[in-house]
Image 1: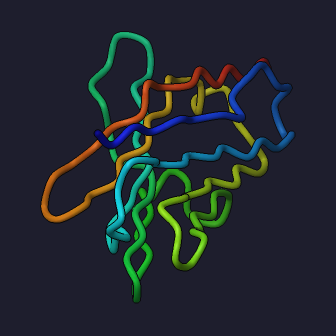
Image 2: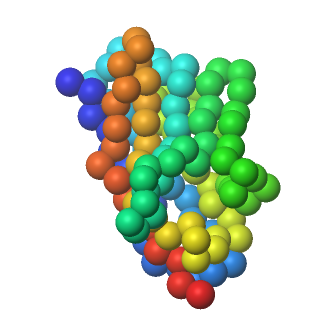
Length: 114
C-alpha cells in the first residue's frame, strides 16, 4: 500500500518562504511524474507545479517564486515557495504517479498573512 506523507506547511508572513516535502512509502517502483496542487478556500483544486525526469511545469501565478524538485531515485518531491503572497493561501496536496496510478497526500495548510 503506497502512502504519502506531507510536511512543511504553516502560517507565514507575506514575502517569506516555506518548503513543502512529500515522501511516498510502500512501493519498489520510482515515480517519473510528481506534482503539487492546491485548493484555496472556496475554490477548486489547481495545479501548482509538476516534475518528470526531464521537465518541470508551473502555474503562471507561481512562476519565478516556486521551485519543484525531487530526490533522484526516491519517491520524494519538494516545493520551495518564496515571496509568498496572501493569494497562495490554500491546502497543498502532493501527487505521485506510480505505474499510471495517482497517489495523493493528505494535504497541508499554508496560510500567508498580509
